[in-house]
Amino acid sequence: MKIKTTIAALGLFSVVSFGASAAQLVNSQQAENLHSAGIISVSGVAGTPSDIRAQLSQKADRQGASAFRIIEARNQDNWHATAEIYQ
Image (tube, rainbow, N blue to C red):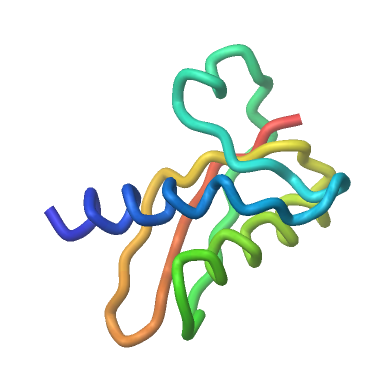
């Protein structure tokens, strides 16, 4: 249940813009028409769900991705999140 709440909270932050060149957060339905380019993760992030999203977006950018979808997130003192990236 905690993971579902966390993912829902991350989704609420998806309306925040991180610039034109940043990889965009997409949902499962949007990802259906995209080509998967792999999996990324971030760990040890202190802060808010928007901090996780920003770090995932930056990491996806470095991998050449245009979009990412969070597939797992948890908070045990610090955030950890895993995302599938798309080109």
